[in-house]
Length: 158
Image (cartoon, rainbow, N blue to C red; front, side, top):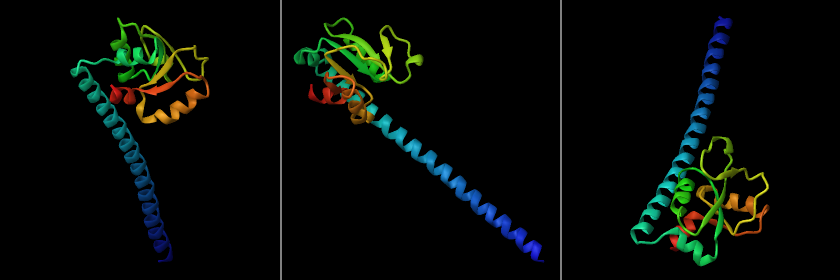
């Protein structure tokens, strides 16, 4: 009888431990998906603002020209980074290089470097990874003395 009680308690305890572990895993996945959702919402809002700017007949080259930024670097080579580079083609603003953590996975016409590499002198670095702007700005400010600006801020200033 005692062995069967111990066995039953072991099964119940194992079930509880398993449920707690599964709950923790689901909670971690839920947090991961929530963060990813926030990131994509921020990206959607950024791109929506960009469309509004274009509908008003404005473009990003005007901002850079007004600031005296002729040679820039772009941090974040995903959707927004690629779109920024495409918008600046055939303008007087030159994207000298891109900066991204995934240098091996990016295929573009410009040189891509890591934040850990030596960064060539440019007039400004535009950060397209808007959800991590403050952290990225801090890291870049330790490596360069040029202005580090958020693409989001630029779009709302135009």
